[in-house]
Length: 610
Image (cartoon, rainbow, N blue to C red):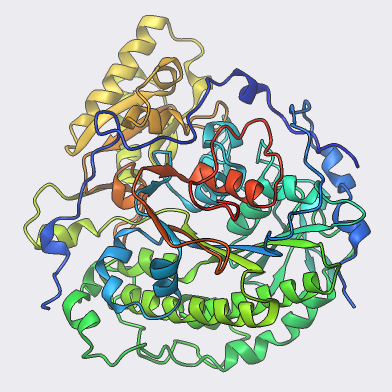
């Protein structure tokens, strides 16, 4: 068995030790900021998967320039007899924990099963200050902070000012598969700087037991974040209107089960003409909780309960995009997951499959309409049923106790600040940061005669051109930093501003706001100024809609539940846990040794031998 592929770890080896599992500590943890009561209305009362190729290292990975990461020896023993054949982590994009407290009484299917029969963690958080899709998925799969795995945001600026996506890669192996060969689009795991649990799983394969790992999503950054380097990522290409992957993951061609599934897509999409509400419009879950705030949304009209724009013509890109907004799109992802699991099931009796599924529709409608919209609430109602159907079918096909389900999210979501203002919550505010950047550049030009110093703003960071500061003195640099901070504080609603150097040198208390920011810095990728707004102050480049960019609970606290009938007992864990504990938990379930960077303990009560 070959060793793990090599990755760059110079920064990893220099980073301070980090905390992966902490209990609730009121003195140090960020204060829980409940949404204003006005915003939360109360209820009135022959396998195509070949064993030889799965465990084999992809030769393309050798092109990654790196030093070897110290890797604990992977445990190659055959899994225990009671270990589940499949582990299926379901990651709901933008699923805040507060949805499970607000809508608990209305869940009847999958969510109900998790809540009533699973191990439920009521205080689970992402341990970084800017929870976004790429960062959240990478943290779940690697078991380390963004400061180690390097996926600090969805996109960031290079030191030269080039906008870099978390999946960017110029190598030929990063080209996506198309019907005509390599496509023009590229995406890979190259920017992920540590191993993931998927890598550990794949390299545990032996002649008697083959491990498989797949990441399935509409989003490339989600699928790749879950699959890591040695798993297999499969995502939806909107231009091809088909699921695809790159030549790193599949050097020759896509597996037959993927291409066969793609052949059914035109029919699946064209038949989805209408977003049908889960309940009647006068159901209390809508009348008590849904708000008509379309004037504050990026779309001024409702799409829930209506015919989707462009419906029936799957060849139009707009129709495909609208289909991906609809709850039915999650069913399609689970159908693809079943195709994957069916292939794995054709292998040996000891074979195991880690099948990540990331559901994207809630994130798409949440950004457009906000967390209190009819679209968001109805999506959650549908997901309850869709996930329940998937779980029931999986257990029928592969046996109860043979599938361990996890449910979690990559981040939460903030309320739309203008809606809070309309409801007289005065501290809420939106700060449109591209306007702030333009203003700063003009003022710096006038004050310091430096032209266009800032590249832009991403997530919670301002990026500037360090090369334009090479000829200024230390005192002039200090004056410039002071000036920028002073101008930002004039905006109002700003709680704290750090520079990269300040965070890098800091030794913050575990779980503090400063600690969450420090967990997300990465030299060469991070901006220079890190901005913490007050609660419900939204720093964004968009004038409407919602987002998730803060270290407050509404963005960091997410659901985390584990269910495996007959092998896990119902339990509720109220102590604080972190999403970095998910990967060690998966390793423990299959008696595998985590990589040396995973310092966190497995989630309590979540392993089958507990």
